[in-house]
Length: 129
Image (cartoon, rainbow, N blue to C red; front, side, top):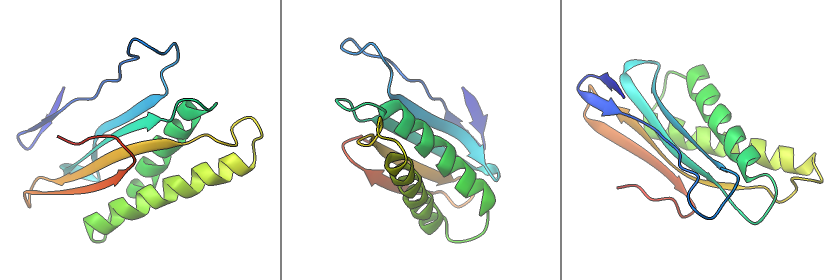
């Protein structure tokens, strides 16, 4: 568990009881500085090959996008990072016959500790409590 500015955060993925392959990923880290926390739950869609590949692409793309764009309105940056992840998954799908149907769902939050604000982006059936 990490703590920054009185915000504790932790991430863990569980295989569950029905699957033999974990198609999920998560992000739980500070971003830009210790004032901002990025937390994302990413679930690969089962039933098609490559859910874990789509989740990994989403994870790396979201972090990379946000690290490269530290300035701007935070909610819009989070939205654009998710759009960029979607575009990267679509590009990978078109380049792979094996993973042509891969996909994932996600819920992402960006916490601005100093401002006391939380921004959220959501696609699919993951939940935020």
